[in-house]
Length: 332
Ligand code: KDG
Image (tube, rainbow, N blue to C red; front, side):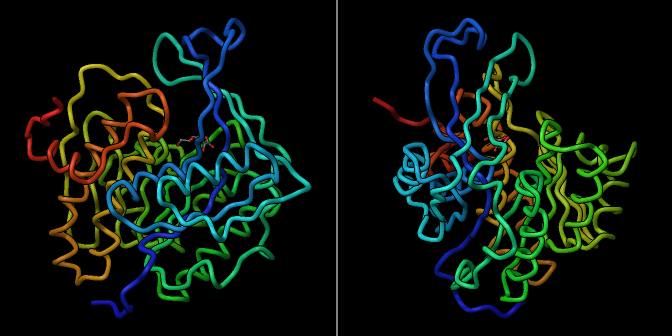
């Protein structure tokens, strides 16, 4: 068992949140007359998914000193996330993005985030207090793509978190619109040695390592540093690899997918809600927890595909437990 005092904050996460606009009636952006406004961002989605599952979370970022920045902070606060370490920048705006539903597959996404407050994150911003009294740090591969110094900053934060006894998870969250393939591949691979849990989707694994089987990806990512590699297989579920175990869980069936964006973050929230404690156990006990974590993660990911926003429809812990036990919820 790894030594670490009881943490007041279960998970710390760092990344950009944006104001999201979606056509109110699902028309294409060019023809939409009205847009619905909400908050989105991979790391804040994970943060809010986790607080709904009863975990304490600190979210760190930079937003503009503008109404959109206020909305983001208020939304996160309203969901019980600690935003005390987030900085409001008077010189740069909060980013926005537009999501457009397509007749098939993933939605189109249009970002307006160049020069945003979060893109100006640099190693000089990193503070010891981010990790005070905390157990785990979660990052994604979006933040390193945002600005000149953001990759350096995220890697430094991962190192600092570990030096303070936190465990670290990393979701590559490949966003091809944000950087070149070459830079994305090199940077994302270089981050692997600084994490304990790595959680790519199957396509991301292929992007990073080229063609291969799930087992080959599991083994090759483990060789680069993490002690757990979780590969997300979409509707098929997920599979986790450790040095001495392979654990699989079937996907949670849904009749129809409404919006895939946010499913990976919901998956991460479900998985981490179990593993942040389990990571402190000895390997055999950790492996026992992996199946529970994957099952939770699969259901969370499936639920996130059932509504249009990234996180608003995510369940509370009691609701998730009812779904996992196959019990019908009494609603009236
Ligand atoms: O994972 C969902 C995110 O992609 C979405 O909320 C927006 O953070 C975002 C991004 O950078 O794409």
